[in-house]
Length: 317
Image (cartoon, rainbow, N blue to C red; front, side, top):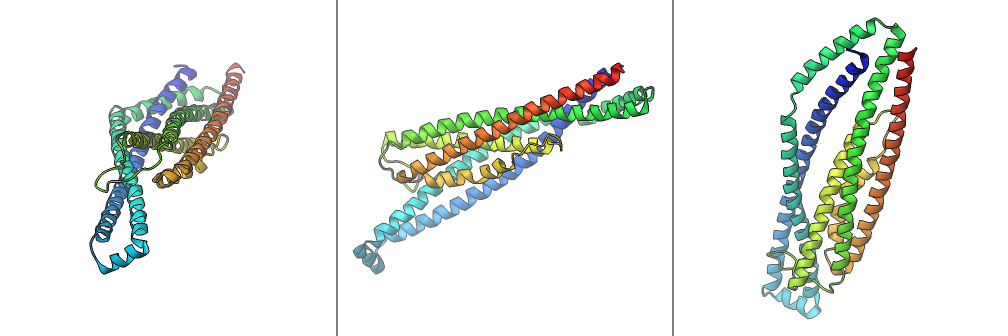
């Protein structure tokens, strides 16, 4: 078998083994995210119960409540607690939706892993190594060493390009979802007031209820899309080489806390504009991150072409 055929076969096997490694890493990452989400559900549920209990006490008769009513403090206390309850309801609903989506992602990852036979791939790889070793033994030692180095660089660069493409696609999906969330918040901003029934979700009128539910769903779609983009960026960072480093850590950290802030910001009407501004900032950040990915994509393609040219020179020497 000729060198190029051996190299192609090795790349195919490595790509499958890399895929299995990525899937295992993603599954561990998703499992951690599911556990974290469960903690959030537990914490928000406990906090919401505590607020409901305090509101029940405010509604009950007591001399202290009479004094608060005379001074207007009771209305202030009740409004403050209702606002906190609204925030908790949003976060609790979001955490439950996130947990469901992450569980589905985990099932998909496990299904893909089940289709990869890592033991058979490792055995095939050993056979290719032996054939390449035999091939290189008949060539000049220095050239053989350089060929092996080029082969490794070529393989890593192709894998990096694949990771970047997947991250770019996830980023484009996130941008689409953020655009939908921004439009929905703009629509929700047209409603003047909203209230909360502490036993359920946010509601004032039927139309308003539908609009707010829609905004909440769009925000969730944006968050899960950002989470998936976040996870793809981690894969890109892991594949970065010294010659082709892709800096995405800033966005990865930023995405971790953004949505906690946005759910707090849009819990009351007067703050919807703040939430819209936050969505706009994240859209800019995603755009910039995709631009950096595209820049590295071009550099990786150019680097790959230079490797192929050098390889051709060795074979034609």
